[in-house]
Image (cartoon, rainbow, N blue to C red):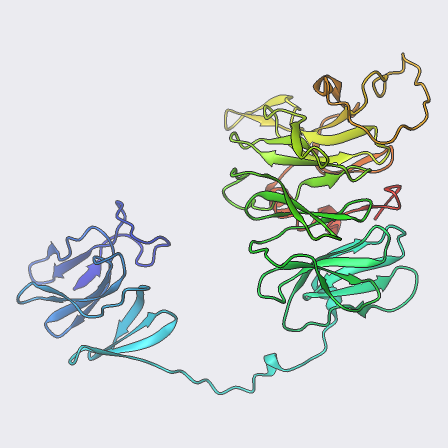
Length: 457
């Protein structure tokens, strides 16, 4: 009997040569002895005894798995198939032929001649699942946003863009594209346009279209990476978005000029966090706030000036900082920071537990003004001088809000108000939801601020 003594015949990595590599042994029932047949350190799998030989799969040449033959009489090994692209996998035999998979196709090897033939499989079917049919898209909503006046809801469902009146009116399909997918539709601040990503050209590009329908106007033509949720600037002249290269860009809607804000080569988490979408606009559309992962995997808060083309660090990376948002009044910046070090001990694991790690931080953007929540200093009412950021000594004007620390995420700001989501404790479900931005507790997938960020949706 020939058998694989250890390892997994279809392990998930190529060229494995570790201690669990598969090897093939011979067991003699008469002498009750075990003899190793293969001595190659690598893949030796699927032994098949045919006549006086053993056929098996090995990647001993160029790290591509092929079928090999071991002759029990001469003890010589010969290569039977000679693929150089992808592996042979899962062979089976009836004693005269070997059927195996290669590059997604079934192949049959005639043992006597040593020749392989690719099979063409035809499965008769009515193909009912491919027939045209009517589907209610409400079960397939992937993304939703709303106009500033709160009267028009923009939805992406099954790859099409729909508009729905929040007070009355029926849903209107703006894209009607069965062969392409549209993503992340967002109405412009003035409510006249809808922008969205579409793969109509083969790669996802950014388009805009009048909110009542009409021609698609391409804003980009050269994007070649996965792109993430974008934001219109408050003045409606620019669009901000991130991509899978860990880079942030904004585009001028009129000139179509694309500008890189910043880029990083650090991942937040090796397992499931790839998305770069933690950014926001200032009320005057001249600044961008965002978080970027640093080498220690903590995120740091930055500001970027469009006029100066420069970035400025607001926090350091000693704590993990996320979700920066400007207050619509222009006076403050908020973000979440993992500074809640009320450490408890795990009695059973002898380890520390942070039950309420996040604090809500407020950055006072103007100097020479009384700090927020200081009742000992009377606030002076001054005429608005427009939006500004006083960068000098800005780090000394950062303080936590007077609320208890907790398990917070998805912070957003309004006009003189700030909101965030909270759970009693983080479990595996919350980690998955937050990292993939799928769904909040109680079935909420996101929430937005509208009407100059005076209302939530």
